Picture 1 (spheres, helix red, strand yellow):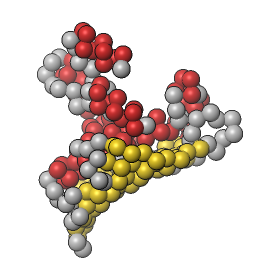
Picture 2 (picture 1 turned 120 degrees about the vertical axis):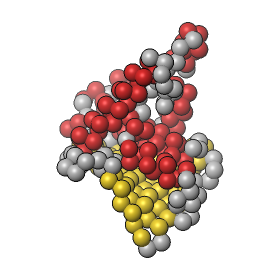
Picture 3 (picture 1 turned 30 degrees about the horizontal axis):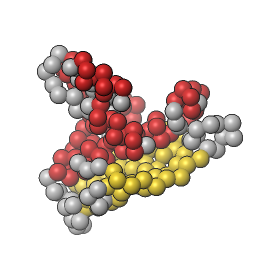
Picture 4 (picture 1 turned 45 degrees about the vertical axis):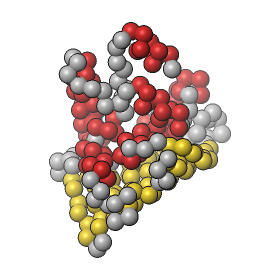
Amino acid sequence: DRIIQAEQAGGGKVMVGMTHRFYPEIVEAKKAVEEGVIGRPFMAVDHISIPKSDFKPWMFDPVLAGGGVFLENAIHSVDRLRWIFSDEVREVYAACGSTAPEAETEDHGIAILRFAGGATASLVQVAHPSLLECVLEIWGEKGSIRVMTWQGLEIRLDQSTRSIRTRKEGTGLWDGIEEGVYDEDNHFLRFAEHKAVPLVDAESAREDLRVI
């Protein structure tokens, strides 16, 4: 809230880093939903698994980090679902825990979101011993979309499946992540030069945080 107040008082504009909006497979999924390719979306499952080795000790300190895997990763699930659905979350049900007795924040959890338009979404978040995976599935009245983040997506209609590869052959998952960060940085530079409207403004990011 203080950041937004300072933004308004200073007459400037804030951009918040929500990298998933810059991944081409997420952009394609949003486009397919907006064009009605799968009909009205009514359900989604968003699963993010990140290796525990990528989490620094401070990320499990509630004072320094504010939360565990939900604040670190689920906030991206919330943001990309809100963006793809063009809708807001009205109800949240969740359960989380930790596999490490000494941890003070969660390293796994499940949440159910209900959107204003009636769609529901399940978020599955985990700090896995070794697995890096980020998969989003969206079901609509005419078909479904399966997004393999950092790789591509599949659009399934009736008995047919259309695969769209959004990365070059041989691109690794970490390379895919870095490409999105690079595109986000370029967008920020254009925004800073007053040549672009921020794709994620402070108000939208605050709504993501409110849901988490």
